[in-house]
Length: 89
Image (cartoon, rainbow, N blue to C red; front, side):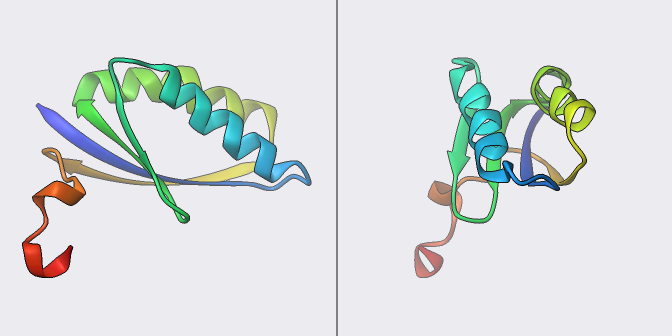
């Protein structure tokens, strides 16, 4: 099953910008993953099972190293900008 996960990461640390940037760059290093970033969140697209494997190797270390909050929205299917009705683009 294909899925979309929308991630908002909130490190409760003075280095929050660097922590977020490092997290996103690790996601983008994965060539098997589609990653879209905007000013409020990051979306990842792919196989449901694979997306959760990716979170094990990218998000879990952040949560173990820093006090942080991660807000995830998970949807079945691939929900990209290209799939929006033209009136919403």
